Structures are given as C-alpha cells and as structure tokens.
Amino acid sequence: MWNPDQYERFRHERHQPFHDLVGLIEPRDRMHVLDLGCGTGELTRQLHEQLHAEETLGIDNSETMLLKSSAFGGKMLHFERGNIEALVTDRPYDLVFSNAALQWVGNHTSLFSRLASFLASHGQLAIQMPSNDDHPSHMVAAEVATQFGIEARPVNVLPVDRYAQLLHTLGFQRQHVRMEVYGHLLHSSRDVVEWVKGTLLTDYERRLPPDEYARFLADYATHLLAVIGDVHPYFYTYKRILIWGSF
Ligand SMILES: C[S@@+](CC[C@H](N)C(=O)[O-])C[C@H]1O[C@@H](n2cnc3c(N)ncnc32)[C@H](O)[C@@H]1O
Image (tube, rainbow, N blue to C red; front, top):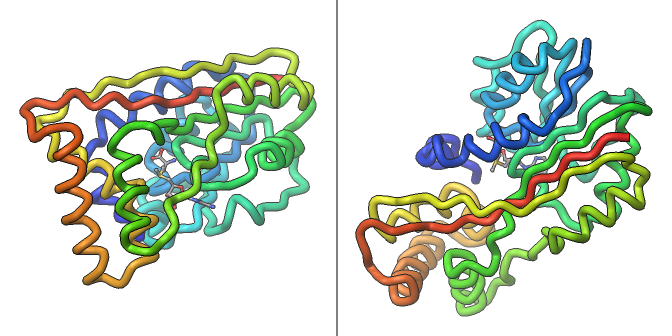
C-alpha cells in the first residue's frame, strides 16, 4: 500500500531528519552500509555518496517503493526485497542505518539486539523514527479504527530514554540519543490528512476493503478537523527520535 508519490508530497519536510541523522555518523574509509526500510532508495543513494561508502545494501519489503530504486542503484549500491524482521546476515556491517522505518517493526528490545549483532567491532548504528503517536493526527486514526472494528496500529516506538539504556546494555561505548520536535508550517490543517495518507494510514488502507477505506478516510478527516480546527496555515508538530551509537 506504500505509494511513493503520496509519500513524496512532503519531500522537503521528510528529508530534514534524514540529513540530521546522517550528520551524527562518523565517516570512515570504505564503509559497508546496510539501510533498513530504504523505500525508493533515493536517500540510500545520498547516504552512499555522502559517506563515500565502499558498498551499500538497501532492504525494503514494498514492491511499489522498490520499483523506483533501479534509478538510484549502481555497481556498489544494491537493493533487495526483504523483511527487516526476517533479515539474516553473516557479513559484519560498518553502519546499520534506518530512516523512518523501524516504527513499523515490533519488539524493539530484541530488534536492536539483532541489529547490533550485524555490526563489525567498530560499527555504528544510526536510526531515526517518528514518535508522534500522542498527536491528534495519530490518536484520531486509532479512534476511527476502533469504530471500524479493526485494531489501532500498535505503538512500537519506546520512550526515548529506553533507547539510551538499550544501547548501553548492548555494549555501545558512545551514543547520542535525542527527541526532536520538527515543526512543519502546512498550508492548512487539511494537509495533515495528506501527510498521514502517505505513511500512518497505509496500514489501515492495507487492512480495509477500498470502499471502507474511503469511508475511513472521510471519517478521519471530519474527526481530525473537529479536534485541530479547520485552520490556515497549520503548524504541525512532529516528534522524532534520533539514535546513534558506536562500539
Ligand atoms: C516512511 S518509508 C521511509 C523510506 C526511506 N527510508 C526514506 O527515508 O525515504 C518506510 C519504509 O519502510 C518500509 N518497511 C516498513 N516495514 C518494513 C519491514 N518490516 N521490512 C522491510 N521494510 C519495511 C516500507 O516499505 C517503506 O518503504
């Protein structure tokens, strides 16, 4: 249900956290990089070039997102279809990276332990995830889901301090973990619907028949605007967690 065109509608806003995350990485010579939930691969390409990486592999389980990746791949930059949960590798990576994808994967305690096991002895982990489930844009979606008889999307992202603890427990010698509020001045509050249609609501779209999803969307918009107001412009606050660690 991922639609690259819908996701790219807020391209500029979505790229800033990626650049902030890349800024935390310590570039080293000839890095081998793994990008989990790489989407179209456009940002994987930027990561690969910015780090002058030796080799980069992007993994994603969405066929529609990966369809675009052929435009960004190269001799030492590959993309493969796969589930983050099922990924196994015997190659040690210098960097395990993930931008805006791990919020879709459950059980972060065991997930982070697995990701740490993919790293070389000097390896780095760099992860960015939205943590905005207490914003009306997300809470209203969960409420409307219940009215439609389906479960709200699970909240997989842990409180920010838990990641600092996790990294310490997993043996990372140095770390930087922070929560950042990205403020987006949208043309109107109705644009929030367009924003979440490209991400959060894909989960509900996948689980509902098309006509019911259309009704879900209409109810969602009505309820959301009742809570946040039908205003122009609208300042959309979006919390994200940025995590970096090095052994
Ligand atoms: C919000 S997009 C981010 C894409 C890219 N990292 C970026 O920053 O532009 C999230 C991506 O994670 C992928 N994804 C979600 N759950 C996944 C899973 N369990 N295994 C692999 N990919 C997954 C989706 O298919 C989607 O392309």
